[in-house]
Length: 291
Image 1 (cartoon, rainbow, N blue to C red):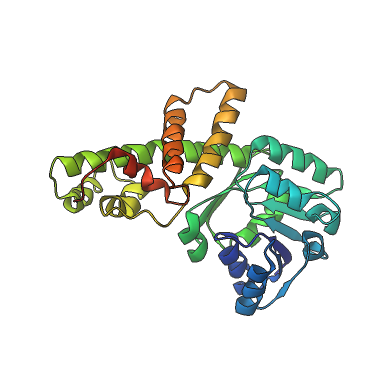
Image 2 (cartoon, rainbow, N blue to C red):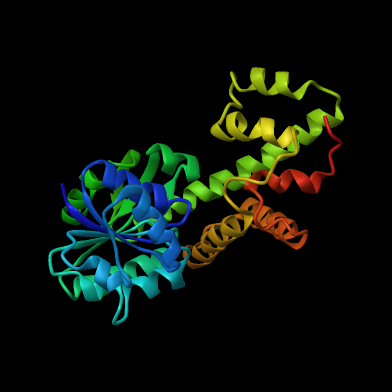
Protein backbone atom coordinates (compact mmCIF):
# COMPACT_ATOMS: atom_id res chain seq x y z
CA UNK A 1 0.00 0.00 0.00
CA UNK A 2 1.19 3.50 -0.82
CA UNK A 3 0.86 6.98 0.57
CA UNK A 4 -0.67 9.10 -2.20
CA UNK A 5 -2.14 12.52 -2.92
CA UNK A 6 -5.10 13.09 -5.20
CA UNK A 7 -5.60 16.57 -6.65
CA UNK A 8 -8.95 17.34 -8.30
CA UNK A 9 -12.22 15.76 -7.16
CA UNK A 10 -14.46 16.30 -10.16
CA UNK A 11 -16.85 13.72 -11.58
CA UNK A 12 -13.86 11.52 -12.44
CA UNK A 13 -11.42 12.25 -9.64
CA UNK A 14 -13.90 11.88 -6.78
CA UNK A 15 -14.66 8.18 -7.36
CA UNK A 16 -11.07 7.44 -8.48
CA UNK A 17 -9.70 8.71 -5.19
CA UNK A 18 -12.38 6.65 -3.49
CA UNK A 19 -11.13 3.48 -5.17
CA UNK A 20 -7.61 4.24 -3.94
CA UNK A 21 -8.91 4.56 -0.39
CA UNK A 22 -10.94 1.37 -0.71
CA UNK A 23 -7.84 -0.54 -1.81
CA UNK A 24 -6.03 0.45 1.36
CA UNK A 25 -3.82 3.27 0.12
CA UNK A 26 -3.33 6.24 2.44
CA UNK A 27 -4.94 9.13 0.55
CA UNK A 28 -4.80 12.88 1.09
CA UNK A 29 -7.02 14.93 -1.22
CA UNK A 30 -7.14 18.50 -2.41
CA UNK A 31 -9.88 20.21 -4.37
CA UNK A 32 -10.20 23.85 -5.36
CA UNK A 33 -13.70 23.90 -3.86
CA UNK A 34 -13.06 22.84 -0.27
CA UNK A 35 -16.62 21.62 0.30
CA UNK A 36 -16.08 18.90 -2.29
CA UNK A 37 -12.97 17.65 -0.46
CA UNK A 38 -14.83 17.77 2.85
CA UNK A 39 -17.63 15.65 1.37
CA UNK A 40 -15.07 13.14 0.08
CA UNK A 41 -13.44 12.83 3.52
CA UNK A 42 -16.86 12.41 5.14
CA UNK A 43 -17.56 9.51 2.78
CA UNK A 44 -14.19 7.78 2.59
CA UNK A 45 -12.20 8.99 5.59
CA UNK A 46 -8.48 9.78 5.17
CA UNK A 47 -7.36 13.41 5.00
CA UNK A 48 -7.60 16.60 3.01
CA UNK A 49 -5.22 19.52 2.59
CA UNK A 50 -5.54 23.23 1.94
CA UNK A 51 -3.08 23.26 -1.00
CA UNK A 52 -1.65 20.72 -3.46
CA UNK A 53 1.72 21.19 -1.79
CA UNK A 54 0.37 20.20 1.62
CA UNK A 55 -1.46 17.21 0.13
CA UNK A 56 1.80 15.93 -1.32
CA UNK A 57 3.92 15.99 1.83
CA UNK A 58 5.23 12.45 2.26
CA UNK A 59 3.40 11.12 -0.81
CA UNK A 60 5.07 8.51 -3.01
CA UNK A 61 2.73 9.26 -5.93
CA UNK A 62 0.64 12.38 -6.56
CA UNK A 63 -2.34 12.12 -8.91
CA UNK A 64 -3.91 15.09 -10.69
CA UNK A 65 -7.23 15.08 -12.53
CA UNK A 66 -8.20 18.62 -13.51
CA UNK A 67 -9.53 20.46 -16.55
CA UNK A 68 -6.94 21.60 -19.08
CA UNK A 69 -3.33 22.67 -19.66
CA UNK A 70 -3.69 25.80 -17.55
CA UNK A 71 -5.31 23.92 -14.68
CA UNK A 72 -2.68 21.20 -14.54
CA UNK A 73 0.16 23.72 -14.65
CA UNK A 74 -1.48 25.67 -11.82
CA UNK A 75 -1.68 22.64 -9.51
CA UNK A 76 1.76 21.24 -10.42
CA UNK A 77 3.88 24.42 -10.41
CA UNK A 78 4.35 27.33 -8.03
CA UNK A 79 4.98 27.70 -4.31
CA UNK A 80 1.82 25.79 -3.38
CA UNK A 81 1.99 23.26 -6.23
CA UNK A 82 2.57 19.52 -6.33
CA UNK A 83 6.26 19.85 -7.17
CA UNK A 84 6.83 21.98 -4.09
CA UNK A 85 5.43 19.25 -1.85
CA UNK A 86 6.98 16.09 -3.29
CA UNK A 87 10.34 14.61 -2.38
CA UNK A 88 12.92 13.39 -4.94
CA UNK A 89 12.09 9.89 -6.18
CA UNK A 90 8.33 10.39 -6.07
CA UNK A 91 6.09 10.42 -9.18
CA UNK A 92 3.35 12.68 -10.53
CA UNK A 93 0.58 10.98 -12.53
CA UNK A 94 -1.49 13.46 -14.53
CA UNK A 95 -4.91 12.09 -15.52
CA UNK A 96 -5.94 15.39 -17.12
CA UNK A 97 -6.62 15.34 -20.86
CA UNK A 98 -4.13 17.99 -21.92
CA UNK A 99 -1.66 18.65 -24.73
CA UNK A 100 1.40 16.50 -25.34
CA UNK A 101 3.44 19.70 -25.26
CA UNK A 102 2.21 20.42 -21.72
CA UNK A 103 3.07 16.88 -20.62
CA UNK A 104 6.60 17.12 -22.00
CA UNK A 105 7.19 20.51 -20.37
CA UNK A 106 6.01 19.32 -16.97
CA UNK A 107 8.08 16.14 -17.28
CA UNK A 108 11.19 18.23 -17.87
CA UNK A 109 10.42 20.48 -14.91
CA UNK A 110 9.79 17.49 -12.64
CA UNK A 111 12.96 15.74 -13.82
CA UNK A 112 14.96 18.79 -12.77
CA UNK A 113 13.84 18.03 -9.20
CA UNK A 114 14.42 14.25 -9.57
CA UNK A 115 10.65 13.68 -9.61
CA UNK A 116 9.00 11.41 -12.16
CA UNK A 117 6.06 12.39 -14.36
CA UNK A 118 3.56 10.18 -16.20
CA UNK A 119 0.89 11.63 -18.48
CA UNK A 120 -2.06 9.26 -18.09
CA UNK A 121 -5.31 10.47 -19.69
CA UNK A 122 -8.42 8.35 -19.28
CA UNK A 123 -11.20 6.80 -21.31
CA UNK A 124 -14.39 5.40 -19.87
CA UNK A 125 -16.16 8.47 -18.56
CA UNK A 126 -17.90 8.96 -15.24
CA UNK A 127 -19.40 5.48 -15.27
CA UNK A 128 -15.96 3.96 -15.81
CA UNK A 129 -14.55 6.01 -12.94
CA UNK A 130 -17.36 5.01 -10.60
CA UNK A 131 -17.03 1.32 -11.50
CA UNK A 132 -13.23 1.28 -11.46
CA UNK A 133 -13.18 0.29 -15.13
CA UNK A 134 -11.14 3.03 -16.81
CA UNK A 135 -8.73 2.67 -19.70
CA UNK A 136 -5.49 4.56 -19.03
CA UNK A 137 -3.03 5.59 -21.75
CA UNK A 138 0.38 6.51 -20.35
CA UNK A 139 3.51 8.34 -21.43
CA UNK A 140 6.76 8.41 -19.48
CA UNK A 141 9.69 6.27 -18.42
CA UNK A 142 9.45 2.57 -17.58
CA UNK A 143 10.62 3.30 -14.03
CA UNK A 144 7.96 5.91 -13.32
CA UNK A 145 5.21 3.87 -14.97
CA UNK A 146 6.16 0.73 -13.05
CA UNK A 147 5.90 2.64 -9.77
CA UNK A 148 2.49 4.12 -10.58
CA UNK A 149 0.75 1.30 -12.48
CA UNK A 150 0.06 -1.00 -9.49
CA UNK A 151 -1.64 1.92 -7.73
CA UNK A 152 -3.66 2.94 -10.80
CA UNK A 153 -4.93 -0.66 -10.91
CA UNK A 154 -7.41 0.41 -8.21
CA UNK A 155 -9.58 2.02 -10.91
CA UNK A 156 -8.22 0.63 -14.20
CA UNK A 157 -9.75 -1.87 -16.57
CA UNK A 158 -6.70 -1.52 -18.80
CA UNK A 159 -3.49 0.46 -18.38
CA UNK A 160 -0.58 0.62 -20.83
CA UNK A 161 2.62 2.58 -21.32
CA UNK A 162 2.52 3.94 -24.87
CA UNK A 163 6.00 5.47 -25.03
CA UNK A 164 7.93 8.51 -23.89
CA UNK A 165 6.43 11.57 -22.23
CA UNK A 166 3.46 12.91 -24.20
CA UNK A 167 2.58 9.52 -25.71
CA UNK A 168 -0.36 9.05 -23.38
CA UNK A 169 -1.84 12.37 -24.46
CA UNK A 170 -1.26 11.57 -28.14
CA UNK A 171 -3.06 8.24 -27.71
CA UNK A 172 -5.98 10.01 -26.04
CA UNK A 173 -6.12 12.33 -29.06
CA UNK A 174 -6.55 9.30 -31.30
CA UNK A 175 -9.35 8.15 -28.98
CA UNK A 176 -11.19 11.47 -29.24
CA UNK A 177 -10.74 11.66 -33.02
CA UNK A 178 -12.36 8.23 -33.32
CA UNK A 179 -15.22 9.14 -30.99
CA UNK A 180 -15.98 12.37 -32.86
CA UNK A 181 -16.49 10.50 -36.12
CA UNK A 182 -18.41 7.67 -34.46
CA UNK A 183 -20.88 9.95 -32.68
CA UNK A 184 -21.57 12.00 -35.79
CA UNK A 185 -22.16 8.82 -37.80
CA UNK A 186 -24.39 7.48 -35.04
CA UNK A 187 -26.43 10.70 -34.94
CA UNK A 188 -26.93 10.64 -38.71
CA UNK A 189 -27.91 6.96 -38.66
CA UNK A 190 -30.42 7.44 -35.83
CA UNK A 191 -31.92 10.51 -37.53
CA UNK A 192 -32.17 8.72 -40.87
CA UNK A 193 -33.87 5.70 -39.32
CA UNK A 194 -36.39 7.85 -37.49
CA UNK A 195 -37.33 9.74 -40.64
CA UNK A 196 -37.67 6.43 -42.47
CA UNK A 197 -40.20 5.30 -39.87
CA UNK A 198 -38.17 2.39 -38.51
CA UNK A 199 -38.56 0.89 -35.06
CA UNK A 200 -35.21 2.26 -33.98
CA UNK A 201 -34.99 0.25 -30.76
CA UNK A 202 -35.22 -2.91 -32.87
CA UNK A 203 -32.80 -1.47 -35.42
CA UNK A 204 -30.21 -0.71 -32.72
CA UNK A 205 -30.55 -4.23 -31.35
CA UNK A 206 -29.93 -5.97 -34.64
CA UNK A 207 -27.29 -3.55 -35.96
CA UNK A 208 -25.37 -3.83 -32.70
CA UNK A 209 -24.81 -7.52 -33.39
CA UNK A 210 -23.11 -6.78 -36.71
CA UNK A 211 -20.12 -4.90 -38.06
CA UNK A 212 -21.53 -1.50 -37.00
CA UNK A 213 -21.66 -2.49 -33.34
CA UNK A 214 -19.81 -0.19 -30.93
CA UNK A 215 -19.79 1.11 -27.37
CA UNK A 216 -21.39 4.31 -28.61
CA UNK A 217 -24.24 2.44 -30.33
CA UNK A 218 -24.87 0.23 -27.29
CA UNK A 219 -24.71 3.05 -24.75
CA UNK A 220 -25.92 6.13 -26.63
CA UNK A 221 -28.20 4.89 -29.42
CA UNK A 222 -31.23 4.39 -27.19
CA UNK A 223 -30.85 7.72 -25.40
CA UNK A 224 -30.39 9.53 -28.71
CA UNK A 225 -33.66 8.25 -30.17
CA UNK A 226 -35.37 9.13 -26.87
CA UNK A 227 -34.01 12.67 -27.07
CA UNK A 228 -32.12 12.38 -23.76
CA UNK A 229 -28.84 14.30 -23.59
CA UNK A 230 -28.65 15.78 -20.08
CA UNK A 231 -25.86 13.50 -18.82
CA UNK A 232 -22.44 12.15 -19.72
CA UNK A 233 -19.33 13.75 -21.20
CA UNK A 234 -20.10 17.42 -21.84
CA UNK A 235 -19.83 19.09 -25.23
CA UNK A 236 -17.67 21.82 -23.65
CA UNK A 237 -15.05 19.24 -22.67
CA UNK A 238 -15.22 17.49 -26.04
CA UNK A 239 -14.55 20.79 -27.81
CA UNK A 240 -11.57 21.34 -25.54
CA UNK A 241 -10.25 17.89 -26.44
CA UNK A 242 -10.84 18.31 -30.17
CA UNK A 243 -9.07 21.66 -30.04
CA UNK A 244 -6.03 19.86 -28.62
CA UNK A 245 -6.26 17.29 -31.43
CA UNK A 246 -6.49 19.96 -34.13
CA UNK A 247 -3.59 21.94 -32.65
CA UNK A 248 -1.41 18.83 -32.61
CA UNK A 249 -2.41 18.01 -36.19
CA UNK A 250 -1.26 21.44 -37.29
CA UNK A 251 2.11 20.70 -35.67
CA UNK A 252 2.62 17.22 -37.08
CA UNK A 253 1.00 17.71 -40.49
CA UNK A 254 -1.85 15.22 -40.02
CA UNK A 255 -5.11 15.91 -41.90
CA UNK A 256 -8.28 15.78 -39.82
CA UNK A 257 -11.09 16.99 -42.11
CA UNK A 258 -13.89 15.02 -40.42
CA UNK A 259 -12.70 15.95 -36.94
CA UNK A 260 -12.62 19.62 -37.89
CA UNK A 261 -16.16 19.39 -39.27
CA UNK A 262 -17.53 17.65 -36.19
CA UNK A 263 -15.81 20.25 -34.01
CA UNK A 264 -17.81 22.90 -35.89
CA UNK A 265 -21.00 20.95 -35.26
CA UNK A 266 -20.21 20.86 -31.54
CA UNK A 267 -19.71 24.62 -31.76
CA UNK A 268 -23.25 24.91 -33.05
CA UNK A 269 -24.52 22.83 -30.11
CA UNK A 270 -22.71 25.22 -27.76
CA UNK A 271 -24.24 28.23 -29.52
CA UNK A 272 -27.65 26.64 -29.03
CA UNK A 273 -27.02 26.50 -25.27
CA UNK A 274 -26.00 22.84 -25.15
CA UNK A 275 -22.47 23.11 -23.83
CA UNK A 276 -23.26 20.94 -20.79
CA UNK A 277 -25.12 18.28 -22.76
CA UNK A 278 -23.61 14.88 -23.56
CA UNK A 279 -21.57 14.56 -26.75
CA UNK A 280 -24.41 12.54 -28.30
CA UNK A 281 -26.36 15.83 -28.49
CA UNK A 282 -25.03 16.18 -32.05
CA UNK A 283 -28.39 14.54 -32.74
CA UNK A 284 -30.13 17.82 -31.86
CA UNK A 285 -28.72 19.49 -34.99
CA UNK A 286 -30.44 17.05 -37.33
CA UNK A 287 -34.00 18.20 -36.53
CA UNK A 288 -35.42 14.71 -36.22
CA UNK A 289 -39.03 14.05 -35.28
CA UNK A 290 -39.71 12.11 -32.09
CA UNK A 291 -39.85 8.37 -32.54
